[in-house]
Amino acid sequence: MKQENWIVYLSGEIHTDWRQRIAAGVEESNLPVTLLGPVTDHVSSDDCGVNILGAEDDDFWKDHKGAKINAIRTRSMIQKSDMVVVRFGDKYKQWNAAFDAGFAAALGKPVITLHAPDLTHSLKEVDGAALAVAQTPEQVVKLLAYVIDGTL
Image 1 (cartoon, one colour):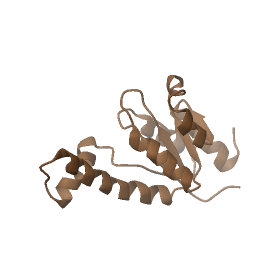
Image 2 (cartoon, rainbow, N blue to C red; image 1 turned 90 degrees about the vertical axis):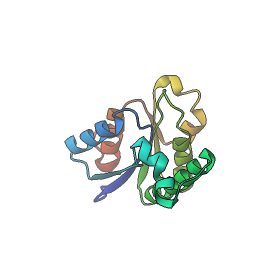
Image 3 (spheres, one colour; image 1 turned 135 degrees about the vertical axis):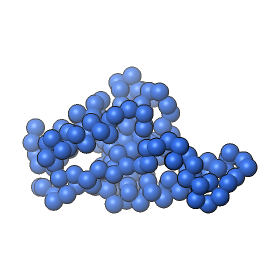
Image 4 (cartoon, rainbow, N blue to C red; image 1 turned 90 degrees about the horizontal axis):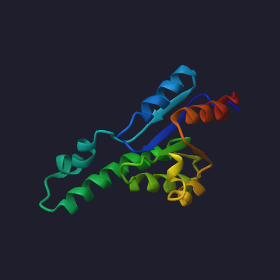
């Protein structure tokens, strides 16, 4: 069953080129996919709350404002997505990505996790909510191609 256009939300770590690799693979495979994601500029993501709603003296409240504004974006995009890919890297803890995976799964959205094999044990509960666990962005593109048009 081929859908006209699929919306795929790409959640998770922002320090590698995995999103660009998926985008290139989707384009190369001519898949009918629109990719959505969070603001990946770290400073903008961290400072959006105080830049929009005003300065805070306490870092807790600065982070709180930013997290809430980013959650508006993330939750809205996940809700309108057909599926969610959640990338976990080894350098930083992506607590927000674990939330995104759980939120998407609770909404009944198919979740694909993407991480290195050495993170399998620590992500076993997150992977348990996923319908597929990939190790490379190229595997994600192959998953999308199969799900969308049945091609291997």
